[in-house]
Length: 274
Image (tube, rainbow, N blue to C red; front, top):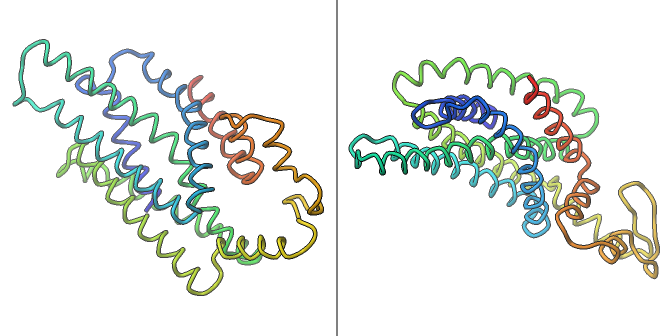
């Protein structure tokens, strides 16, 4: 569902961005939007880190998916209203609505491209947390193939959907599919909790076990005693609680997000050059 929704949202957003009615005619607008994706991704990762600490992975995934669907729906409605011919047709009103539509489509383009990898990594993080190494070898390839097939089917269905829906309806359809994906992912977490293999429960059990013992274990395998200053405490004391520190702490705790961040930078840089 996530890949199908992204394919619909990506195609609809790009069409609206390059449209003369709602988007930009200048050839420099698209490279500018693409270049904005990377710094905006850092902001999203910082927000994600705070949400993950406060609400846990299940609630964070549900919340970020809801926000993605809400952004698609809100921007679609704004663009639809700005292009309605029944509104005031004066020159001032037309220029005002044109500027609003450009702001909405620019934000939609940046947010959609920045958040898709964040949602993608959360789904894979859950799958990798509830599967063993042997299960991962068996199921990861079929899951990846099914995701690619879903994206292909969604891309092929766009021309048929546009016969009954316009581009705004396409974005709302993508938002509805994202909500379906949120329900499926939340159900997966609930099933994991019922059968006692939830990654959240395993992390809590590990934390309780470390608290009961005299030494604590770091992700790299190193240990420190209770009377010693932990690396996390040392980092908090030595540095400031700024955006860079939060991002670094997040990448240390979840290395796959650091790799995904580098992937975003490389992909956006290459796409800007191409």
